[in-house]
Length: 221
Image (cartoon, rainbow, N blue to C red; front, side, top):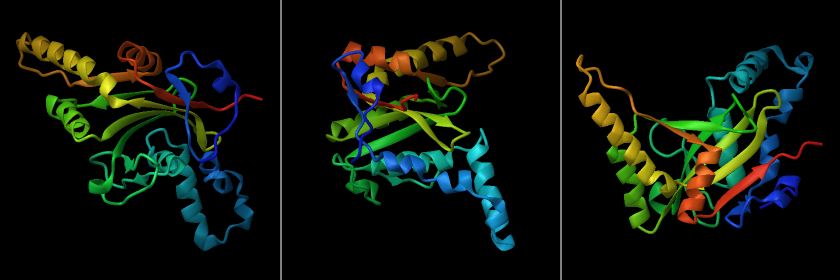
């Protein structure tokens, strides 16, 4: 896969940080929509163009950028809302059947801060955490992607790839504290579990468990 040489790769914070191997040309997959002159679009195609552009600009719609992540990493893009967002093999070969995959991915595209993306695992449960552990026990890997989405350029400004096992104990600790807190709610109202994931926190967890993670950042010229 093609990699971009950029200043960030020369400024690695530790030996655990490695450059991300991916197809950078896929980050331009919506360039034609960005630069399209509407005067050149046939009337019967104009609505489709407008819908595509609106989905790329919408802060509530991340599906186009999830597809971009899958395409750039050489993964199968899961079109359904449930389950992992993408999967493939260790050598970045896309396989339609999840049963044939060795690597599973959860995407967290973030447009609110493209240079420092963050995300959440909503409605987290012990069952969800155990599912990741079960996959690891089969000799397979689960990865979490934090990606900075630029809604002006219809592209990505950075991609961080973290091994999901670094969050295991921290997620369990957070959930147990929340369960204890809910026990004290006299009105019986349960607080929704929303586990926050940020770049700095993820890097610290990688250092704590001595785990390699992968980074790409767009160079600013």
